[in-house]
Structure formats: structure tokens, C-alpha cells
Image (cartoon, rainbow, N blue to C red; front, side, top):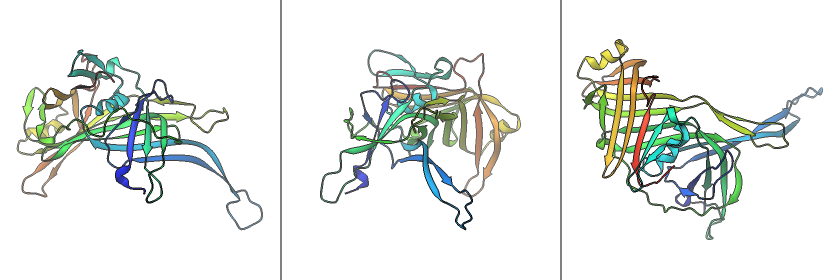
Length: 320
């Protein structure tokens, strides 16, 4: 009865690290990966016997999660908050405008996840148990799109407390979601100019996450911390002007902006000071035309309030 289509993933914004709130929401994702690992303590002491291992003992544990899906405007705000911090929100009716600005949000929330794989015997209803992962801190979030292929997508990885078995939670939202942004709908600015040759784009937000154990008669981590924010970008463009290469050669530092709109909902990613020196420009001659691949890094600037990156998301969710 373990049918993939019956699986689901729900999440919960925690009130404090390791303490889930009361409201669970379903999030549409591709088949996820959740992993709980324990320290394997081996007894390999010499005993005058030609055998290496004499015992295995379970140590402390932790979990990792890898999720990806389409960029549905409502749900993705929780993933952005998990890496950048809770947003400032404006408006009292839809669309609510959420501003994810690193400078004003130093504290990032943790999430709890429920993985329900719908296990059970053939011919009977799935078991009502799920695997619950708490204290999950985001160490990477990537948002990406290709103008000619599909929708805007995202993937994220988390680190936190080891998984436990819990009753299947009741989710507050249905399985359907608002339509995602589509790749061709995007518009891009490089510097102060509209740029109309971008083929694909990826922006990655990363933090170091540390979950630490303490001597307190528990195999669960005692606390979790996140490090500073790093923002890098990659893009592929139609190579038809020399200045596309000169951005790297001249160490140009200027804005890189991407905008998506669907009715009243929109997403605006603004990196006002971006260096093209992250990696060499690569020219791809494998097709009918030449493409150039950029590697960039968003920089902090004390004189620019929304550096290294600001995301403005307008949708129907009142707050994150």
C-alpha cells in the first residue's frame, strides 16, 4: 500500500527552536528526502583476535531534509523566511506585501516538518503514523527558472533534530495551491537597464547551520545556530554583445534584479550590488548560437539598505 502519490509533506513554523506550533500546512513538493543519522560508535579494540569490530553503540542523532518544488506564491514565503528572517508586512487586505530584508531581520525562524509516506499493507488504509522533524534550520535555498522551460522552481535543505514517530497531523490547507510563476513571465534588470537576453537564472541563499549536542541524557541536539548569510547567483545569457563578457573582466559591481507578476501577486528579487567576479565567464558553443554563463555574488553595502538582497513577495498570506 506504500504508494508514492499518497505521500505528503506538511510544515509548521515553530514558536521556539524545537517546539512546533499548532497549525500544520501542506506544501506541494517533489519526492522529498529526509534522513536521520546517529553516531555509530564502534568498539575496535585489539583483543588478540583477527576481527575488527566487537561492538556497535548508538550515539547522538540529528536530521537533514532536502525539498524542492514549484514556486507557488503562498507557500514559498515560509521557505524564504527560514533563510532570510521573518519579513516586514504591509497591507490589511490581499495582496499582502512581504519584504524579506536581511538588514532588519537577524533572527531566522525554525520549521518543523511532517513526512507522511502512507505506509501500510496492501488492501488496507495507510497507517496513521508520520515522521516528524523539529528544529529544522535552513542552510540553503535556491530559486531558479529557465525562460523557455517550465515554471519557477525552488529547492531547500535543512538541518535539525532527529526524526520521531508521531500521529499524522491535520493540515490547515488543501492540496491545491495558487498557480506558480512561469519562467517566461519574468523580467530582468542589469544595472539600471532592462536586460532582454537572459535565458536562465538561479539565486542561492546559504548559511552555515550548527546543531550541537550537550551532556544532558538525551540523544537529541540541545541547540541550533545559523551563521551569516551568503548570496550567489548564476545566469545564462545569449552572447551577442562584448559588454556581457566585460562585466567579469572589469569587475563590474551593479544591480541584478528579477521580477515576476501574476495578476495581483508578484515577486521581486533585488540584489543592488552584485559582483560578476565570482567565476570566469564561460562561453558555450554547443548549439546554434553562443551562450555566456555568468557567476555572481551579492555584496553588502552599508549605504544601501536592502543589501545583499531583498525579496518582495505579494500574495494572499497575511504574515509569515
